[in-house]
Amino acid sequence: MTTPAAADPVLSLEAIEARADRRGLLLRLRAPRRLGVWGLQVVVARPRPGRLPLLLGELKGWAIPTAAGLRLDTLRVQGEASHGVGALIWAATFAWALEATPCRRARLLAIRDAPEQHRRLVRYFERLGFRAERELGAGPLDLGPRLLWGGSGLLMEGDCAGGLRRCARWLGTRPAAG
Image (cartoon, rainbow, N blue to C red; front, side, top):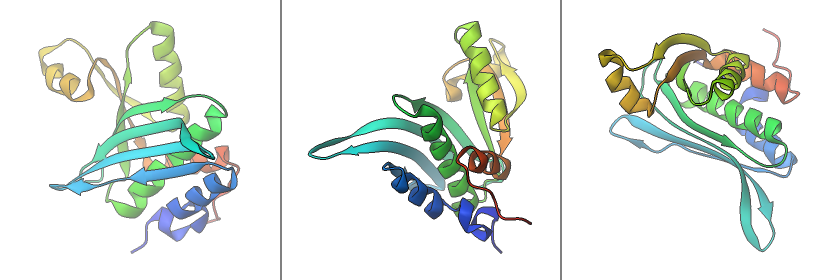
């Protein structure tokens, strides 16, 4: 059985890595698996001859082998061409989940810092297809999830295939019909 990403070479992790390379960027994904859990790190950097590459963006998370098992924890995008870097990171993350794991849905926490920053973060995740699931606040039932996620905020869930299609549009790649 093929996954949506594996069935469409335009959206495969290999194709996304090649797209980054054509833009002069390094895209690296590490996902070691220990005790049934994948640790995930996706990095985009600009090579610099004779020096260490310049880090432009990074995403960290983990995955357990279930349909809703992808958890995304930390995203940082900095410096030049941040929109394209973010799209590459998200596309690689979703493609990896679809190709290498049974994960089809991802969860993340839109952390609640300053009100305007939180609103921007929620809008950004909504553009990726994430939808509000529930608020993590100060209630006793929220203690465990808050410890896991590292704070309070809006817990959101999104579809990996839908997120990958959105990223393909942002990257100027049209998914194959079907």
